[in-house]
Image (cartoon, rainbow, N blue to C red; front, side, top):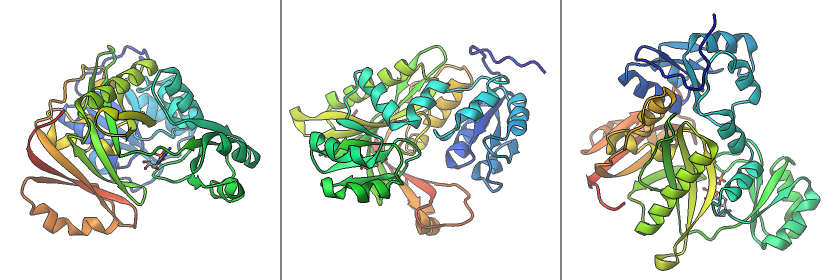
Length: 370
Ligand code: AMP
């Protein structure tokens, strides 16, 4: 069958969005799509994927299964993804059959920390000073230039603090190189940040983009624990964060939701932003938007990939999102009873330590701040 793989394709209600990845993000995209009359077909190697249970169709296959990808690509009207480590080969198999949104450039840039930093720096976005590390021998001279301590991060496949280690001095180089598995890496100056934030942008096929209010993010054991909106930053800093997010989305020609994680350094008139990394997708630090805005990050992602206009989020409440990690989710009976809070559970069968099982959005009164 000949499909319209044209980049300008606009879906109609009843059409199908294909989603690569069947975790909680895919599940929440599918739930938002359902509300807008769109079906979803989830592609994931895990037969027990949380997203399968809320979608019309599911394919259980590997991300490089050519036949499975062809059938999937032919059965959907657009493909999107819930994680950035989609292999380039997957895209190559899908591209003849369906548009892929966001596009290959957004994925390529965010899959490799060196390319990501180069892109951000070229786009005029401030980042921590960094050096490219291709071998253990590169670490000591880079550390001498950057100052210590510095953070060694693998270029690819790092998440939630995995694939990174702090390097304190040159004698620590061998341990650090081994700790990250001896893979191509970057060494990054440690940023003395006051708080961490993120900005989420939704950009449509027509290039129009909207921004979400900045979230202040707190981590525990390298995993996001709380996102609070409004963030404790000056109005000018919030404006600067939005502008950075928009610049990044525009420079990538991004279609869909994109997140830029930020460090906030200093306070008051001294406050400034340093970008940490990009996630070319809906993000855990945007889950608050499900209950505190008119249009969540998931809705705007669906709108964008469908070729529909994105809409202003219009936050109506102050909010705190708490991630329910591992056994936290066993508290569901008491969480259900909290007034002004909305519980979201992902339907994962097993509450393993460190596993994101759900989240709760606690509304804190009418929207304030910026
Ligand atoms: P990442 O995997 O790059 O998102 O890093 C995970 C976490 O490590 C961040 O959320 C920060 O808390 C911390 N971190 C990463 N890079 C730096 C840095 N250059 N300076 C200080 N802290 C960092």
